[in-house]
Image 1 (cartoon, helix red, strand yellow):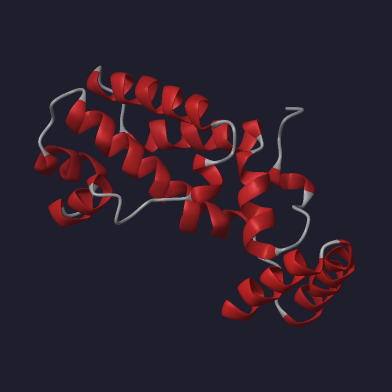
Image 2 (cartoon, rainbow, N blue to C red; image 1 turned 90 degrees about the horizontal axis):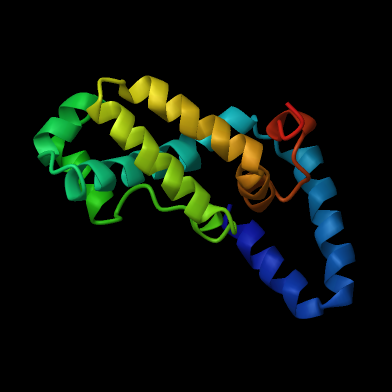
Length: 158
């Protein structure tokens, strides 16, 4: 979707007129591109970030080997290496959300629970719920679709 990046760059350059331009793009997106299901964005952007931070926490602070983390995650050693080198799992929307410190605290707690016997599935789901409740997913959704997130993306009232 390189054209969307160019269009957003044009909209920013147009200033106030850019808002109307961007709203026009939203209509184009809705007419010609299927709406993304929020779960797709979780798979593409949120889960890799969770894995990256959990891998980093388990290796650096809990002294697990990359091979042990890979075994627990059900991925290859190479995947863990890429997470640790930030070649995988980076999401600027999450990192710049204003809630990143809360995200990292949740990851730290999840890693500790994993060390005490919890599993990757349970802890990933807990962190994902936190991402949704904090509004971070709304930001990811808006950035990657160019449209307002559907109500199911934010469960802040739950």
